[in-house]
Structures are given as C-alpha cells and as structure tokens.
Image (tube, rainbow, N blue to C red):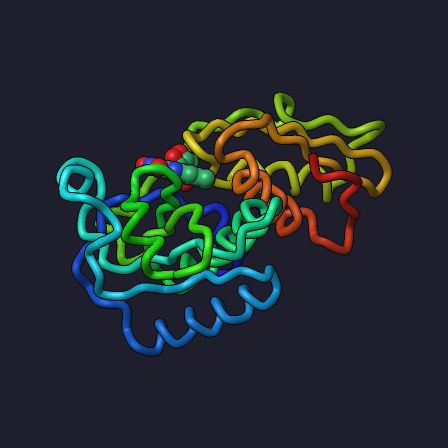
Length: 222
Ligand SMILES: Cc1cc2nc3c(=O)[nH]c(=O)nc-3n(C[C@H](O)[C@H](O)[C@H](O)COP(=O)(O)O)c2cc1C
C-alpha cells in the first residue's frame, strides 16, 4: 500500500489488540519520525509500551488497549499547530502503509502526563498507534461541491486534491475548510477554532498528496 492508498484506508481506530509492534517496524517508524521532525521543526516522540496516555474513565469508555502513541510536540510558535498537523498526517499515513492503525486525539488525553515527557515543549495532542481491533470505517463527508471552487474548468489535479482533502481527519469530523483554485494557485481557508491549526495542516498535506505538489502552488494559508 502506498501513501495515496493509505489515505483511502485510514480511519480512526480507538480499540487496539495487544499484538506488539515488531522491532523492525518500530525502527522504520522512528526513522520517519526523525525525518519528519527535521522537515517540520517539531519534536514528535514515539512512546511505546506505556498506558498513561489516557485516564481510567476514558480507558473504560473510549480508548481500549492504547499502549503506543506519538506525542505531538514542539517549541511554542504561532504555526506549531499547522506544522504538527502536516507532520502528523504524514505519520498516520506512513503507519497505515505498515499495516498499523491510528487515532488523533486533541482533547481527551492526559495533558499533564504527556507534557512531563517532553519538558520545555508545547504538546497539542497525541496519535495512538497499534494493531486495531477493527480497521475503522470511512467518516461522514461533505461533498467536493460544498468545500471547493475552481475558477474555470477544473483540472484533474484539483479534483484529486479536493478528494484527498476530504479524506483527511479533522477534529469532530467538521471539515470546516474552503478550497479555492485559479490557474495553478490554490488557497485553503479553515474556520477559526481550537483545532483549526492542526486541521489546516492535515488538510493541506492531504490535498498536496492527492494533487501532486508539482501541479500547483499555495496562494495563502488562511
Ligand atoms: C485535531 C484533531 C483532534 C481530535 N481530537 C479527538 C478527541 O479529543 N477525541 C476523539 O475521540 N477523537 C478526536 N479526533 C478524531 C476525530 O474525531 C476523527 O479523526 C474524525 O471524526 C474523522 O474520522 P477519521 O479519522 O476516521 O477520518 C481528533 C481529530 C483531529 C484531527
């Protein structure tokens, strides 16, 4: 499975089996984390065999068997959230290509415990990773017409980009974005809100993967 196919197959999975992640796969993931941290200037960290990401109540009702996760962290900065959105999108899809499942959690994790693991950094969420009890299911989605407009006849790359953007995970599945294209320029606006930065990063990453980054350039981010 390549990264494009991974966009289609990735769905939120909240329950995990106890199958450990083999050492060879852990090595690949850690290699990707290093590359991604260098590219996006982030401090994402893979934590393994650790059950402290959620409190007891959340584990009882929502998060089953989460033992491995990424801490989404970096130095405080106005675009940290957007950079972590893009970096996290890459990691979720990369893990999917390795046969793993993931779940982005921005609200319901143990904030204080995660902050202790990356001193001096801001933590904006975690991504649970492991072998899912299920593969999850496709999220309810807006249509391309609801979120995107193109000036003149729509090129194939724009259509593919919008389709990919609609596959991105967004907080509460809101998909609160508008994509505009004209010539080879594209802009994406995201409705302001708590998770708007990371949602924007996730959606832009997906759009670029679907459209092909050589096909277009970004006009403005917000
Ligand atoms: C920024 C962000 C924050 C999220 N926070 C939570 C959360 O606190 N709790 C939760 O159960 N899911 C959370 N999610 C998961 C979303 O609800 C889920 O990704 C969305 O419904 C789309 O489904 P999909 O991942 O299957 O495409 C979050 C997702 C994103 C992108």
